[in-house]
Length: 186
Image 1 (cartoon, one colour):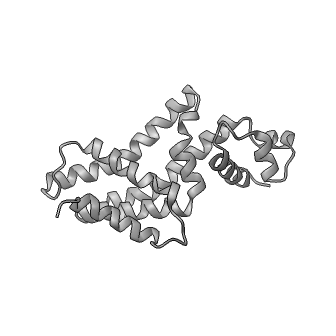
Image 2: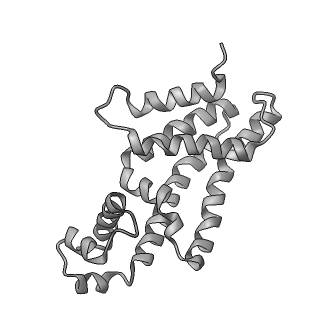
């Protein structure tokens, strides 16, 4: 039994039951440990949650940062970022769900530690949108609001996406990008 096994199991339990509905006993059971043995590996649910959030934001940042820093035009970078982000959400749905829905369960000290990581991730998106606006590709008077609206829309996908559904995650990503770039107006 490794710490990674415990964290993976905890992400599944948190996704199913929510942070407050999950118990250390349920996490222990999901990895065939006694609750007391689980405490040999981790000290608390808060520790697990913070580590899962760190893991998720690091994974996203590692995948998105190179795309944001690419020399391509801002529209091409943003489309690639949307696609990569959606793929990560689909491939790591348990971890993504914890990041998107359980961060509010952090105690204030851990929450204060998490927020700068989230802000750095959002800044990658905002910087690309700012670059596109400066280059005349985008008309975006409020990049911060645009990033929050975009990520909010993409994030909600984890609640309804099914791998065996009518559209692949890549198709959904491309349609989201088209909607962002082209809007609804004919």
